[in-house]
Structures are given as structure tokens and as C-alpha cells.
Image (tube, rainbow, N blue to C red; front, side):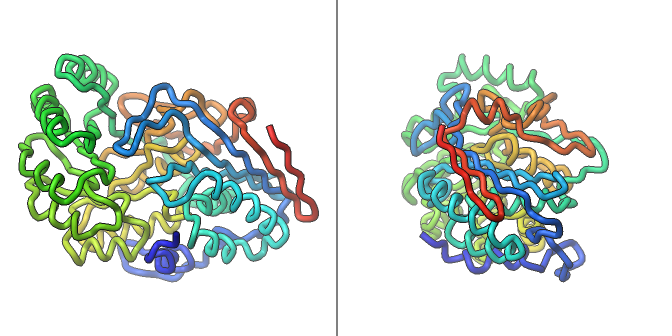
Length: 398
């Protein structure tokens, strides 16, 4: 399925980067090869989680992840990630893996056309295209990944407990770990959701901010009943109550709400951001790198959200450490609230050598750090691989 906004979301990436001073053309070779391409390697992975990640559309027990590594003839490497969760995207892992394999061969055969090729892939497979677009940006030395100083990126913590006593224990542990913003998943059973939130508010009692997320599970009527039952105390925002394409349902909930609203799954690019602003549909707009294909496009979208008077939130809770690291680098410069790029904490093992550092409720980033893939970790989770060179392609199934 091609999103209606697909043809629009490339305006930031394909040559126009928005910043505080306005819109400026840039001489950007983010996806072009200035050095000869040596190889493109794909890894299809099944990454187990420490515990099921419970969403309204079902528990997630593992991440279905595609990692791209692109190496030039000087030995420089860029890496990118696509973790496919149908519901967050229209893509399926089978479709994405097939598309990625085909694209890797095309890229190896004609790397000079990389920018155009990535853009075309992103129209139908944005998550998959991100694995290539960001790998090429990294290979070209993207400024977004080059931190000049160490950075601490606060992250949102996740509440799993369902009864008040367990909530107290879990919340105390989250506070000790340094979290000051906690996400609560709703969208399961309306009456129980309402009581769950009330119980957690009693536990929090002003000590943290609460984010509520329904992951599209409510109808308009259910969403309106939910927000009318809410006490706004400590609630920072309520995220995506209704189906991504049902703007009318979301607007009905937003008009009934006394808490700030956030859109997530409804947002794929600049056109959706502008629609949200025009309709006054949300105070917050959440972005994921995997929807926008490149770091440059993500930065442009963040700036556009602010230009239109809304607040950006960034992060993907269903991503491994390569994608979380990239989002963290952007967040360190551009985001002033808790990041949602906490997927790396859910995975049983990192894909990057040494993993990502976490402390005091935050991702801890080191200046000048260039991550590399952990081959042992990759091999442990590999389902399939493909390596393409300019004149040959070799695949090996595991």
C-alpha cells in the first residue's frame, strides 16, 4: 500500500532542508557514492526480546530486523536498520526482505543513482528504504551522526504492571533507574484501561510525567469515553487513540480531551504534519526515523513541526541499537523531551559492538563514536544474508 503522503515526504530529503532560518537548498550527497562501492551486505535477523512488548494489536516477542552494511573501496562502512512491525508500517517482513534483496543488487550495479533509487524504494517501502538511506548517509559522513560533545538523551520508561501494588514496585524501580517520563499502554479493555490509569496516577503522585498510548485501538466512541474519564494530573499526552487513517475519529477524541494529544501512526511525512497542524489535531507529533528514510528528512520534519506550532517527539520503541543510536544523535541536538528510542533496551543482545550505553534514565552518547556491527551478535540472530558486489551477488541462507 502506498501512503497518500508518499510523494511529498521527499521534499526535505531530496534537496531542501528546513531549519530555523527557513528553507534552504543544500549541496547534499547523502545517498551518492563519491568513492567506489565495494559491497552491499544485508542481514535478516530475528532478535529475541527480554520480555514480550505488549501492544494493543498483540504482544511482540522478537524484532524482525533487516540490517544493511555498505562498504566503499577505502574500507569505510555505513550501517542502517529496518525493523518491521506490521501495524507500525504497512510493510511485512517477507515483503521487505524481498524488496531489500532486489534493491541491494540494483544499488551495487548502479551506485551513482543511489539517491533516486532510495527515493523510489521509499515510496512503497519506507522502513526498508531507511536501512539503505541511512547507511549511505553514514558512509558519506552525515553531520547528524558526528557529535562534537558527549550527550545524554533522556528516555521514556515503560510500565508493564497491571495492579496498584505491582505498579508501586515497578515505578519505584523506574525512578531509581533515572526515568522521569513513563509510558502506559492502553487500548485493551476500555473500563480496565480507565482504572489502570487512575491507579497509576495515584502511584505517581507528581513524581513523573505520564504518556498514554492506545496504538490505534479505540473507536471514536471509545476514545471519547476514555478521555472524558481522565483526570489530567501528571498526564503529558495521549497518543494515537484511533486508526492511523481515521482522522475524523481522532479529531472527535481530540475535541473531547482535556489532555494534550499526540499523533504517531498517522504521520508519515511533511504532508501529514501539515494536515495535523491545519486540523489542529495534536499538540505533539511523534516521528520515527524508519518512516522518513534519511536523517536529513527527519531533521527537516522536526523543524517543520516546530514551524507549525506543534511539539516534536522522537523515537522508535521497536528498533534495535543501530536505529536507536541514529535517533539518539538527532535527539541530542533537536529534541527537548523524553525520547522513545528505547527498543535497544528490549532486545536480548546488541547488534553493535559494545552496544549502547544507558545510565540515569538516558542513552549516553560519546562524541566522535563510530559504531560497528557485532558480527557474533549478528550471526546469532541471522535468518538469511545477502552480499552484493558491483559485478556479482552471493547469498547464503542460515
